[in-house]
Image (cartoon, rainbow, N blue to C red; front, side):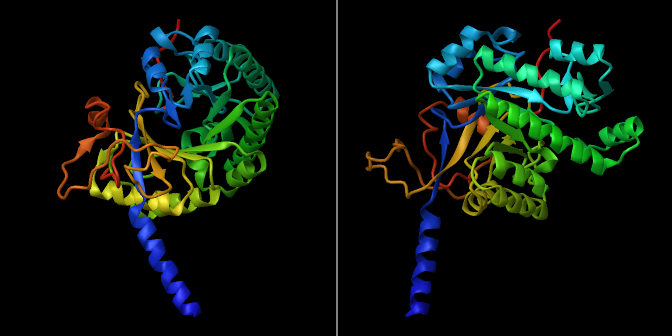
Length: 355
C-alpha cells in the first residue's frame, strides 16, 4: 500500500510540474527597476507593484520629487530607493561630497565609471547613510534597495582595504555584515521595506541567516545567463539553485537582455521548480526601460477559469524550432502578444551625473 501511494504521488508530481506555466507579464508586475531615461507615464501605465529607482535619476534625468513619489504610491506602485553600502557615485552629489570632505573616498571602481569605494566601516559613513535613509523615508520612499554588499569578493577592493587597514578579506567580510545589519535595522525601524542585492554574497550562509533574522527581500543577478546573454556554466547554475533554495521566499532574479531559447526555458523550469523565487525580471543592462517579469503560475492554466486571482487572457502551445527572440522584441510587439505564454521558451548602477 505504501509503495502504491508513493507511485501515485510521483505521477501526480510529474503531471503537476508539466502543467505549471510561466507567464510573461507587462501589467501589474511584481518587481521592476528603472533608473535611467525614466518615462514617468510608462510607469503609471504598467504600474509595477515594487519599483526600484535611483533617487538622483528620475524623469528628465533629475532627482525624484516628493510629488512624483506620491503619485506613484497613489497608483499602487511602491517606490524603493537605490542606496549603495560600500560604494558611492559621483552623481549622488550630497553623499559623494560628504565622503570627499570627510576623507572617506577610496579608488575608482574599474568596472563602473563614476563610482568609488568608500570607507563604509567607519562610524562617520554609517551615520551619513542612516541620515540618508531618514531623508528617503520623509521624501516618500517605502523601501530601500541596498547594493554592493559583497566588497570582499572584489579583488581591487580587497587590495585597497588591506593597504588602508592592514587587515585581510575575512575582516572586510565581517565589517560588511556588521554595517549591513545596522543599515537593515535602521531601515526597518523607519518602516522601510528592505531589498538586498546579494552579488557574490549569494553563496554566503551569513546572508541567508541575516535574511531569516530580519525578513528582508533578496535580489540576485545573472542566474541563468551572464550579462552578455551566454548561459552560465552548469555547475555555477546549480550553485545558484542551491543558494536560492536556502534563501526561501522573497527572492527575485534579474536577467539582462535574456534570449528566448529552449535552453533558457529548461533553466526557468528548474529555477521555479527547485526554489521559491518570486519572479525573474528581465531588463536592459542600463535599466533604461521597464522590463518584464517571468513568474510561476502556481496552478495549471485554464483560460476558461475566470475565478482565479490572476486572469488568463491568452495562451499558446510551445512551438518546435522556435527562433531566438529577445525579450525586448517581445515587449515591442505589444500587449496582444504578451499577457501569458505557457512554458516560455523563453543593480548595475548607472545614470547620468548631475552637476
